Image 1 (cartoon, rainbow, N blue to C red):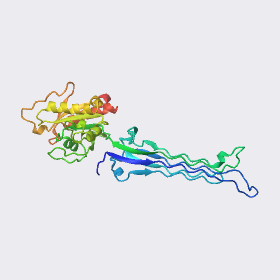
Image 2 (image 1 turned 90 degrees about the vertical axis):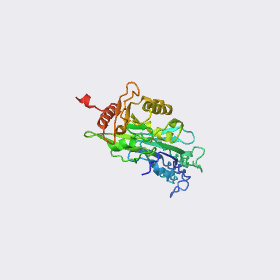
Image 3 (image 1 turned 90 degrees about the horizontal axis):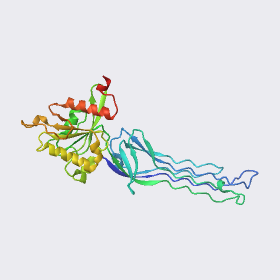
Image 4 (image 1 turned 45 degrees about the vertical axis):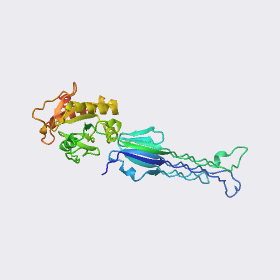
Length: 335
């Protein structure tokens, strides 16, 4: 499935039906009063978050969503039929903006969350409503009101417990393939990963968390270098960050600091998230390798996804942090 994380669509609620101009015409009542019914309301347009959806790909092919208009009013005070509503499914994590104003209209986070994004127009009143003591035979009715219409910009931000952050070729894809069922493309050259990958990481029995492999960040990503802005937005919803640097990096501490700097420039609150420092590819580390202190108070976990070294320690620490963020009982709390 092709991953698409932005799209632009048009939604238009249905117009309200017209009110009816009608008069009672019954046997023995040749000149009855007005009995025109009201028009039905136009159909609404709803957005509904669906966790089964993982991409905005469908909106690349269908860009217009128009609800039915309301039925016109009828004689004998009969109201027109309401226009049919339409429900548009979007992935959880979709931010919806008004394309004209840039205003955020909704943030679809929870599975099943539903919001009316465009309201159908009210049906017009029939002539029965306009009879007065001095105007007993009104020959007019209201037209239906117009339904709301918007051009929407949709942006998908992946929702995961853990986000892997690092330069290209830091070993993020190899790690997620080693500890989850995800199977991203892996090769020994930069920018192998061009779209985010999600993996379910199983932990002991009946426990799991979601990990996102974010495509490699480069220096200047926060200013839009490479595909930086497209990649960085997916980190915003992750609860925990794993900042990865390869053991064969020329300057691990500098590379780590650069990654934190890019995160801060893009969104300062990202540095408030819990993070774990990981040095990957320890199987190819130089013989004289020493673990640098990357920042005070942050433990450094050394791993080799290929050899399986350090993966259990990493999963233990990740589950501990995920439990804290999700307010789940940890093993220590149970004991």
